[in-house]
Image (cartoon, rainbow, N blue to C red; front, side, top):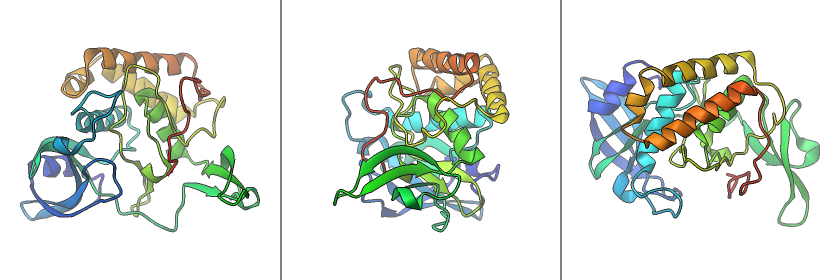
Amino acid sequence: MDPRDPAVPALLRHGRIEITGRLVDASNATLFGTVTADGAQVQCVYKPVRGERPLWDFPDGTLAGREVAAYLVSEAAGFHVVPPTVLRDGPFGPGMVQVWVDTDDERELVDVCAPADVPPGWLGVLRARGSRGEPAVLVHADVPPLQAMAAFDIVTNNADRKGGHVLAGLDGNVYGVDHGLCLHTEDKLRTVLWGWVGRPLPEDVVEALKRLRSELDDGLPDALNEHITLREMRMLTARVDALLANPCYPEPSGYGPAIPWPAF
C-alpha cells in the first residue's frame, strides 16, 4: 500500500496491529509489525509510550505525541515529508504508529565520504577525520525534497535529524522519520541538512510556510493541542513567522551542537 494513500491514516488508527519484530538499534522501544482492516494491510512502526527512554530536556511520555504533531505540521504545510503517523492504543499500550517506508538502498541522500569522492552537485556540511586520520566530509544531496525537509526541521525545531532519519522511499518520495525530539520551546535544531545556509528558500517552500501559517490561525491548533503545549504551539508559530520574515536558510544558532551525535 502506498504510504501516501489517503486511506492509510484511518487504517493506522483503526486496524488490528500485529507485532512481528523489533528494531534493536533504536534508543526507545521501536516495534515492527502490520496493521490490518477490511482486507487492507500496511507495515508499520509502533513506539509505545511506556518504552520511551527518559530525557532530561523533554517531558516524560511526550515523544510519541511529538511524532504525531510533526506529521500534522508536515501535512498542513504540504511538505509531505513525514509518513502517516497516528497516536493510538496498541499491544503495549498507547503509542505512535507510523507507516513503514521501504527504502531504495541505491539512492543515497546523506553520506560521509572522502573529499575527492563527493558526488557532483552535493553540498558539504562538515569536514572531519576518520578513525585513521584520513580526511572526510559530511555531505547531502541538493534536491527539492531535502530543501523542504530542512525548512520543516527549522520550524519544528528538530533536535535529531540524523542521516539515517532521511529515507529515499521505493515509491520515489523522500521521507523523514524519528521526530520525537521536536517542537521544544528552546532552540534545539540539530541536523545534517545545513548545506543551504544563507541561501534563499525556494519559492515552493515559502508557499508551504504560508499555508502552514494560515493553518495555525485556523484549525491546526485544535489538532496539535492534543500533543504539545500552548507555549510550544506559540513558539512553532513564532518560528514560522521568523522564517517568513527572513526567507533564508539560517545559520546554526550557536546554542548547543548543530549536528546530532551520532550523525547517522
